[in-house]
Picture 1 (tube, rainbow, N blue to C red):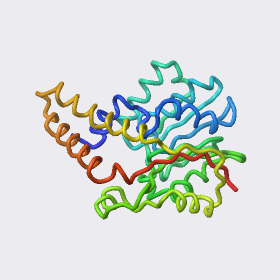
Picture 2 (cartoon, rainbow, N blue to C red):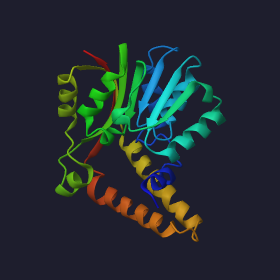
Picture 3 (tube, rainbow, N blue to C red):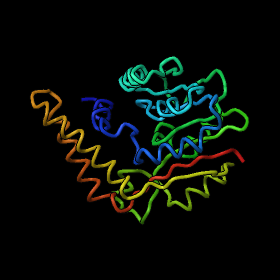
Length: 243
């Protein structure tokens, strides 16, 4: 079973694919979308949930999403059709880091996808290239809420604590105008949904060739979360404007 299949199954009950609840997503989009007629780009859009919610809330908004997963884009197209916003959504099967947009955007989103660019600074540098004058960026990334163990660093990579993360963002020429730090409830709900959705699928499909792998992945992920990074990992979303 490919990684993108695992991810799609694991996010079945949490389509935003980040540790935020619905109210947090709504509030972030309210602060990030500058006006109803905005053009919005999501770099690493996955199943397109951020764009779908923005399109539903703003009838004049037009959106584009970029992702390397054809399966995720197929899901986004179908979800857009069901929600009646497909005419205002364009999806690109490309590498988000090198996406050659033909025009600028009022809002660029990249939440939980900084790994595709090589980290937060590189993500913001890529987003800046697509911004129209007066545009905004909505970015989400992890940080260390407490001193991590070597195992946590090996698992999740080289992150900073929250103050250092903010210092780096500001030093790169951005001004935060809104933000959200995921609560313990949001972080735990995301992990329970990830592991539970995947495990449930495996139990419901015992004859599927991928069932055993899915159940093992869910179990391993749950153990890593509980034993390695639950108490040290945090997640922050920022609405930024160029300084």
